[in-house]
Length: 331
Ligand code: PBG
Image 1 (tube, rainbow, N blue to C red):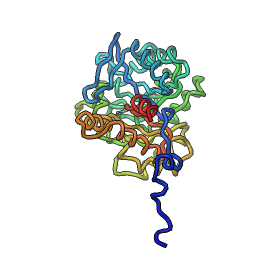
Image 2 (image 1 turned 180 degrees about the horizontal axis):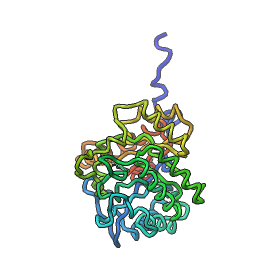
Image 3 (image 1 turned 90 degrees about the horizontal axis):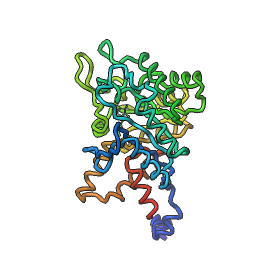
Image 4 (image 1 turned 60 degrees about the vertical axis):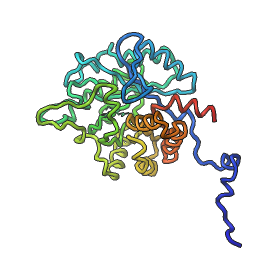
């Protein structure tokens, strides 16, 4: 009589495995991060992110058309700001003709139906490489949220569908939501980086944008006074719940693979969609191993992306979006 239940029956062929599969990955799940630079005809590879590039606006236009044709319908824009335009207050972030504002228009012109999200934080614009304004030996909270709100309105005016505040200042979602309502953008959404940890996995991204924090007297050179301590779990729930209460439409966990427990925890706590960010360091690790033939790139990437979805994510920000969309078609 032993055993009546044999779990392997449900694994015995590809057909039965397909029938009982609980989680399915599709290109609809992906948001594509894009790095934009000034200039013409520029496609610069990022040293610590092999096969990932900074694009000038003309190349960006071609890129988003290609993404759209592959079934990738959402992008998240980041800009690399020239050093001479950086200051402590991120003044250039509010320039109506700034690179971000132009990038939003470029994408919307090329692909009107593409969902355009924009990164909202001061770090690419900050001469100090911090997400907020530096003063009195700290990163000033309330002064920063005011600028982030103006920045969000400026992105909405340029045509962004969603703003994505990645700064981790307290109260920024409410400040941004109120500003968008007051300035006539009630339909502009907010995807909040709500559980964003102070992670060493952001290294390659800071290379991509040349945005790493610099030495300043009496100010910590890291982001630990605003990004979360990676030892904490309850704090992630609290942060996320607060962002939902303040008006976030989508919340986010970041980084991804080391934080799947947090994705699940938050899935159980909130009713809004959850995004997860497979960050630059995760990309770099997988890419480096694949380039050495130590891992099978397609297999490990698809396994990692599916794990995000199984953990409870609705959207996945990934530098592998294009490759994964191709691979999913082949399957
Ligand atoms: C900026 C920002 C960062 C990332 C997204 N937005 C870097 C940071 O917080 O230092 C990281 C993304 C990645 O590593 O892929 N606030």
